[in-house]
Image (cartoon, rainbow, N blue to C red; front, top):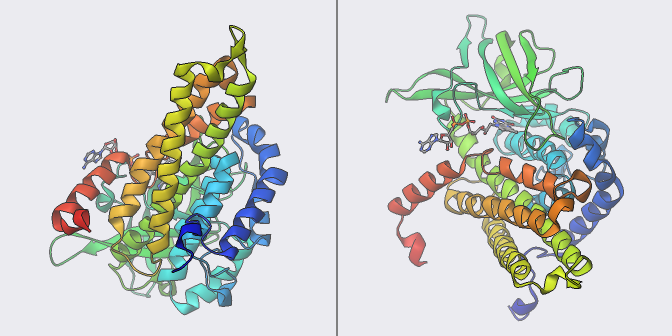
Length: 403
Ligand SMILES: Cc1cc2nc3c(=O)[nH]c(=O)nc-3n(C[C@H](O)[C@H](O)[C@H](O)COP(=O)(O)OP(=O)(O)OC[C@H]3O[C@@H](n4cnc5c(N)ncnc54)[C@H](O)[C@@H]3O)c2cc1C
C-alpha cells in the first residue's frame, strides 16, 4: 500500500469520514442543546432518539435489505464516539438499541425474524432492549433464574425478572420496550451446565411488563434503566432464536461489538474533556498568568492527551479487524474496554481538577461526563471480568503476545 502513511485509522474510508461529519453536525445542532436538561431531569429523549432512525444510524450494521446501513464496527465506534462527546447517556440508549438488540438480531436471527422486526427497529418506530442481567445475577450470567418452559401447545412460558435494562421503559409512563432480546434458562445440558436460550418478546405479549424505573443513578441519567417482569409470559415458537441452548453463541459474539462500542463512548468522553480542559487552561488566569503555564496543570493535560491518543488507536485498530459475523475476538474487545473506560474516567477527573469550581457544576459539562464514564467500568462487563477474560485467553493462546 503506497499511501499507508496517510491512512487515518479512525476514518479509514470516505464513507466513515462522512458518517463522522454527519453525526458531529447532528450532535452540535440537536444533542448538545438538550443534554444538560435530560441528565438533570433523568429523562430519555424519545423524540430525538427517533431522529437517529432518519439518519440511518439505528440499523447501522444491518443489511440494507432489512432497512439498515450495512456498515462495520468502525462505523459503530464513530457514532458512539461522536454522540458521547456530548451526551453519553443518550448514547447508551442508542447502544442498547442498535448494538445490543438490533445487531444481535441482524446476525443471529432467522430471515423471518429479521423481516418482521428489523425494518421497524431501524426506522425508530420500534424501540429495543437486551435483557441479560437479573437482580441476583450479573457477572455470573449463567446463573440466571429467568426460565422458559416449552408447553404442550408449542408455546414457551417464561417467568423471571430482569434488572438494569437500558430502554426497558421508553417514557415517563413506564411503557415497556417494544422488543426485548431476552435470555432465559431452558434446561440443563448433558454436561450439567445451564442451557440458555434466546427469545424475542414483543410488547403486548401476555405476561410481559415493565417493573420499576431505576432513579438516582450516578450517571447515564438520560437513558432509562428499568426492571422487566415476565409472569407466565407466553411466547410463540417462532420467537425462539436459533435452537434451544444457542444463546452462548449469540451472547459471546454480540458482547464483542458491545464492548468495543462502550470503549468508543470512552473516546468521545475523553476527547471532550481534553478539549474543554485545554481551552479553559488557556483562558483562566491565576497569579497573573494562564493556569496552562503551571507544571501541575501541564501534567493533567499532557497525560490526558497521551491516554486519549492511545485509546483512539487501540479502539479503532480493534474495529478494523473485528468481524461482526464471527466470535472469538474477545481478547481485544475486552482489552479496549478495560483500558479506555478507566482512562476516560481519569481524563474527566483531571478536567474537573483543571477547571476548579467551574468544573464541578453541570453547565461546564465535564462533571456529567465524569459521572457517565464510571458506568463504562461496570456495564457490558465489569473491569474485573475483562481482567479475568484476558488472563484466561492469554493462557490458552500465549502466541497472541508475540504476534
Ligand atoms: C446503567 C446500567 C445500564 C445497564 N444496562 C444493561 C442492559 O441493557 N442489559 C443488561 O442485561 N444489563 C445491563 N446492565 C447490567 C450490567 O451489565 C451489570 O451491572 C454488570 O454486568 C455487573 O453485574 P452486577 O451489577 O450484578 O454486579 P456483580 O456481578 O454482582 O459484581 C459485583 C462485583 O463483584 C465482582 N465480581 C463478580 N464476579 C467476579 C469474579 N468471578 N472475579 C472477580 N470479581 C468478580 C464484579 O467485578 C463487581 O466488582 C446495566 C447496568 C447499569 C448500571
